[in-house]
Length: 328
View 1 (spheres, rainbow, N blue to C red):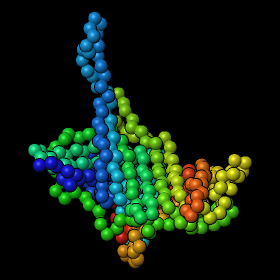
View 2: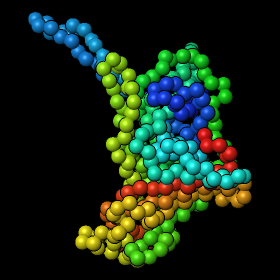
View 3: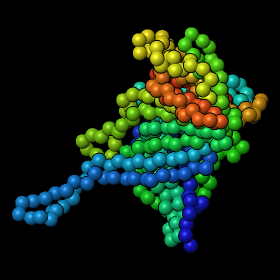
View 4: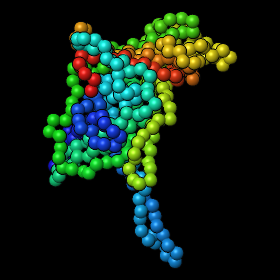
């Protein structure tokens, strides 16, 4: 019998110290999870000797691995891997969780992948996981899709013991394009809804690296070399605001692009459409936004005309409304 993805699962849990297996694998990445290629490499070293063509032996260097996960956005908890712990407000559902300035350290987690093989179960635990990249994207008539790129510093022993009740998300809370809103602040103006958005993408990169030291093949810590945010969106070409900002910025950069100001220039919101205790939303407030490029996507008879904006942001604050009483 051929085994398919329906015989497998993936889940993760926060680590108390880098590289130590999580005590609680209780978090799904989202809905409709799909695991990409899992790679583990021991950095083989070839040993050769004089008067011989064949290799004499092998030795091994640092152990490193990578995995990618695609899923439908349904919860905000993976943001801790980018921002650290959130700040919670509210005494009853729904609660508000705010992820503000990212810390200089990286929050690590363990990831477990289980698969009920035809002849033997397979359970893998990847340790010292750091989120190197996280992307959110959607388009007309689509769900809100995410991809997570993960690097890990070691792997625990493979076992045959599977989790009988792997973490699963609430199917009632997927986000779709229909409950999304994008707002832009033109130079000298205020937040205004962007008209007729066709598609959008937002990417976070925390430039996370693993640190190795003499005495172990496995990573001993992680660190980040920066925190970058960029994105793109396509919408109806209604005015010249964004084009003019691009034209002007080369001589006079907007004040919002400089210094430590945190005035929201671009606001992206997804909501489940619920109200009261059932409300669930994720709002990304981007500040220090600069336009990288502007393009008009063709002008042809009887077809709508759209503009595409590529942008970078100095930073973002993410505000999440969720009925869950404790951040996972």
